[in-house]
Amino acid sequence: MIQGQKNTEANYRAVMLDSSSSLKDFSLDRKKYHRKYILNETIEEKDTAAANMGRLVETILMEPELFEEKFFLSCCASAPTGLMLEFVEALYRVTRDATDESGNVSRNFESLSKEAYDISSFKIKYEAVINKFVGSDAELYYHEIRKVRTNNLTVVTSLDVTMAEKIVETLKRSSVTSPIVNTVDSVRYTVINQLQVEDYVVFYHNFKSMMDKVIVDHEEETIQVYDLKCTWNVENFFEEYYLYRRAYIQAYLYKKAAEHLASIEGTEYHGYTVLNPRFIVCDSANYYSPLVYTLSNEDMLDAEQGFEYKGRTYPGVEGLIRSLKWATDNNIWEISEENFLCDGVINIRTQWK
Image (cartoon, rainbow, N blue to C red; front, side, top):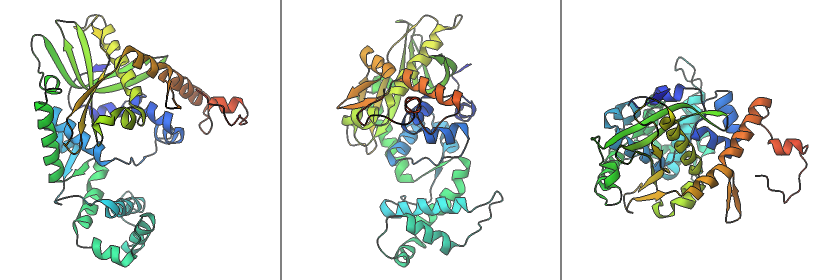
């Protein structure tokens, strides 16, 4: 099934298929994959400030009408930061774990806050932390996230929204990104935001993808996929994001999704050439100019087969799918196929690819 409609994120997440995100999770932490996608446990994601800003920028730029479905505007002038944010997040988690389905909390605040204090990295005394917390914006923020996270909303402040709006304006004005983000539907172009492609096959495994922006050029008969990233280090995107967060998996699967779209007979895109995906990268603090990162055919081959960079091996999509299939078929998650076949005894210098 192919969807290009807006307001489909909830439906997309409900489709039980692997995606670039789940394959990335498997590549980095098979235990997390097993818990989240096989056992269907709720895993609390550690969203970074840059990641949240990226979602906010993406929504304001591409789907402003969906703001209230994704975000809750905090009454706080600014969210807590540093150690206080760490304490608030810990307090939220221990409170959530002590809350039943009816919303009743089984422990008192002192017990919860002391556990949160022990989890946090505060070095000052517990009493000093509580004095700073009670009656402050941090306490208000704590009550807000308790209220809205159960509805899958992200709490943002007015400062966050203002910054996101500035980043959007930068993207629209930049000579590098404006030709992309300002392109609209016309006789020549079809522009689709948050395009879903479901149930496409890569190495005999079914996937789904939701692509940020797809621009179809009917004159050139090409399909170009773009993914928006918001980072704290725009000019070091390759090492800090593309490699570290394994975004090459996403790029590879996005191209395969678009190729599936172009392969369906009877559609207006049938037979179009799918170009290699591109990353639009903006600065979460709106200081550095946005950049567009392109991928070569060699990059796409690396993403498929795996590669080395500065002595470190990055697994390719083909090998990851093979490993995932073995784990799924055998219901073995605590050890890789290679180490299983070696009975858990391997040479210290052996590197499996």
